[in-house]
Image 1 (cartoon, protein in one colour):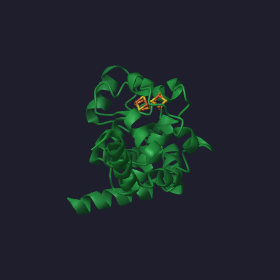
Image 2 (tube, protein in one colour; image 1 turned 45 degrees about the vertical axis):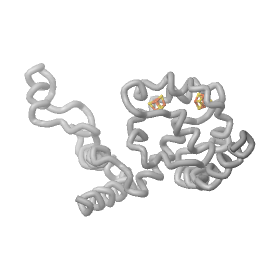
Image 3 (cartoon, helix red, strand yellow; image 1 turned 180 degrees about the vertical axis):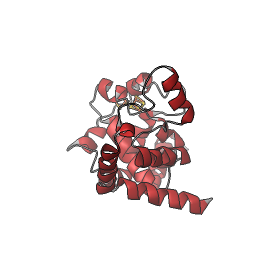
Length: 194
Ligand code: SF4
Ligand code: SF4
């Protein structure tokens, strides 16, 4: 096979595996993306500055450059990659990208898409349930309360933990935006799977 034939075969193979990832991400991400964000993803030149800036990617399999490439070409499906959930949404990659690709927003949009398909770790669902129940991502247990008292602090910090009315407001907001139901459904699905 000569060079021309080989490149035609590669183009054909890529064409066959192309999917509508870009369209789906735009749709699922409509609440987190800004006008023009999808178009800007096409400007990526694969320089790798995003990966080099990523604190999470240093310790995990997260590769933001590869994720952007998948969206750009519509090849592959990063929603199946558990590393998608290793992003801390710190925005370091997005702030440094020389092409102004909204990398972090695209991760959030992809996560929306993944979540809607049940592709989310149990740990994330557990944290979200704690938020719905307590207004915090981490629960303050007996040990934490005792520690605070031993240090001369109030048993609970001056947050929603000390203000039941404020906690109710938080829960009402979470409910109004559909978050509570979303997490409830995700948990039920996970329970059903186990
Ligand atoms: S820094 Fe921007 S242009 Fe460079 S690879 Fe990452 S997303 Fe693409
Ligand atoms: S926003 Fe996510 S992908 Fe970007 S640098 Fe931070 S952890 Fe890495």
